[in-house]
Image 1 (cartoon, one colour):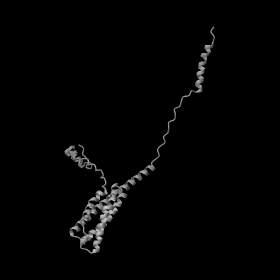
Image 2 (cartoon, one colour; image 1 turned 60 degrees about the vertical axis):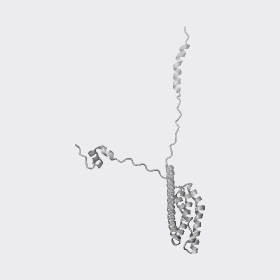
Image 3 (tube, one colour; image 1 turned 60 degrees about the horizontal axis):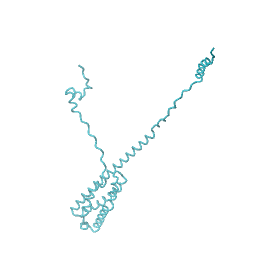
Image 4 (cartoon, one colour; image 1 turned 90 degrees about the horizontal axis):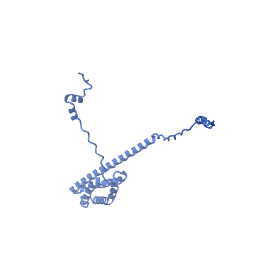
Length: 225
């Protein structure tokens, strides 16, 4: 009986010896599931619409003229709220429509993202003012709406960054392919085979043929007696 060396006696081999090959096959892991295909990018409108709808709803119930603040603060807050309304109804929709036409385009998504950044800054001023002078319910709702807008803004920014990285990778791969093609050896020229040679009779063979044929002709010319 041969003794198996210690360095060759692995745990898998021990299981085969102890329980037979069926036990090892039963414990073998199944094939890992295939990784899911990459998900398509969402349109900027799909990302931002929930927070924009919530913002529109809170604007309809705000009454800054009744807040407990000075006249100057109330006027400034009213101007900011009107600016947000104009942006939601006039400026932002066409920017989002342009971005929606190509969600993976950084150039088309950036104008909408910059507008949302400015919208967030104005809403932030209104929300900070509401904490000091607005009714508590309005202040709480504004804070939640601001947080929702922040989440949408962050998600849109991350998607734009991912699109930019994808474009950079595509450009890098294209440049690498061009460099590879430039350094590839030139294909060998295709040479056409020479035409087949025709056999020519040599002058010697022609002379030999004539010499063999001359005695016959001389015999045929000899008169008979």
